Image (cartoon, rainbow over all chains, first blue to last red; front, side):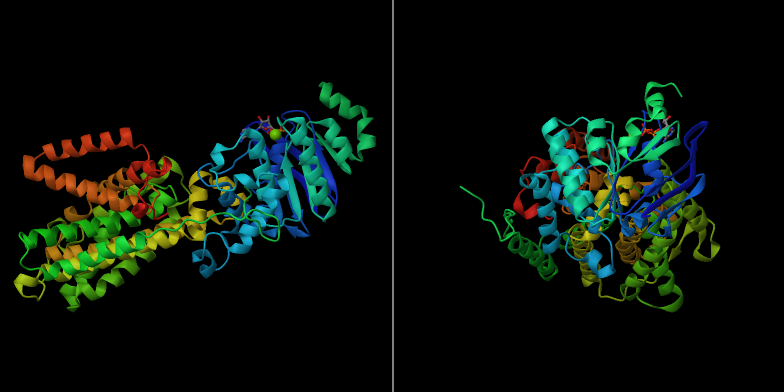
Length: 243
Length: 334
Ligand SMILES: Nc1ncnc2c1ncn2[C@@H]1O[C@H](COP(=O)(O)OP(=O)(O)O)[C@@H](O)[C@H]1O
Ligand SMILES: [Mg+2]
């Protein structure tokens, strides 16, 4: 298993956002994480990426215990993530947004050039891959909503992550863009990148994912292949609020 | 018309060039040559103005590394000014070492202090951070006010510099010039490095920067420490030029406030901003002294200028001009 979430809990005051949650993501798969609003999906992402520390439980990535590590450490181990509400750095250019993650390494590297030629090349290829290469020199704040989604998606690929967490990558984007995003995820998955995707669009979930994890009220209520999940009564109950 | 493409099919992007190096080189040469023109009218006044201007350029440019690039406003930055001054001053008084030699030591000491303070204080964000820097200033002030060995709040005098009186300003002038150039160069290097990119990223969204793989805590501490270095250096030089150490010279919050004002007027987070801000504020100050004498009117005029600038240049002079694409090439150092 590439990612193992093991009996993880997180409460905010009295709200148990994630409660004794366990699931695993197999390397090479596209796994969907679904559940009604407030189920705890984004909180789970925050726990995996290190933005939040679990109250209890362990999280393992590629065999390493990453519980409580700071986010940059987890990122460097090969976990990339996007945000449900995009968090591009508005005052930086699109290209600079792509390469911010390269601000690591030795003292010399840190004081070296802002954007190395090979980084620029890689960034431009990725921007081209998602179709926004022509925006490279624009400030990120000038981008449209859909373009921001694409930038966030492209920038997470810069560090060549093994696991990519996407928080509602298709939320609020038009159908043409949605097709593009689905296609790019599939292409990247074929090169070996593992995906864990929070998504509300059920068509997308069902035709893209190999495995589906269903959360409700902070708990994982079931996990399995999409065909089985589709006909699972508990999933329907969760979405219809009958739990 | 199509953009030229390389072998990967990704469009090549144009690069900017400019001849600002020539202009800046000439300005620097004039500054270097100035002390040789003894016949200048008001020679001593001009040199003193240079000393003060270069000192404020060095301080504001340094402050800008943490306050501008990293976005953490420090209102206690003059602790490094004072500690640099006291360290070099005491080494002169008790060991006879010239502050011109020990100023670098003072800077390094402040750099180390910056690391220590950064380790403690960067757990705080936003207003809490600002308050923690004020707290630092208060603590250091109380310490020096009560440290009898260095004269407490009365201070302690230092031996006068051993130079002929007609040349006395010259070494101070050059020391401050070197500090100003050094600190602007440091800021320039940072702005053009991955370190600077990381600082700008965390200034906008610390969580995002972390998730992108940046060790934000280490970056902030490094920024704070680097921003302390030249403040310590010019503190040492300034103390020697006054030949006197007293807490009220260094540790009043007005000194830190001046760094903030100059940076904001010039353009916080830009490389040229602190230089422009220092020039503008000192020019305004000198003019209003000439026009109104050394009175409270001075402060009023400064306040009005600040309001006016912020009204028309909300990102500071350099920042706003750049935002509108109107920044002259010789000031485009970012
Ligand atoms: N930082 C926070 N502080 C307080 N409550 C939070 C915080 N983040 C999430 N919650 C609460 O935790 C629950 C789960 O939220 P979230 O993980 O965002 O759900 P989802 O992404 O599945 O819609 C919700 O009840 C939400 O209000
Ligand atoms: Mg969510």
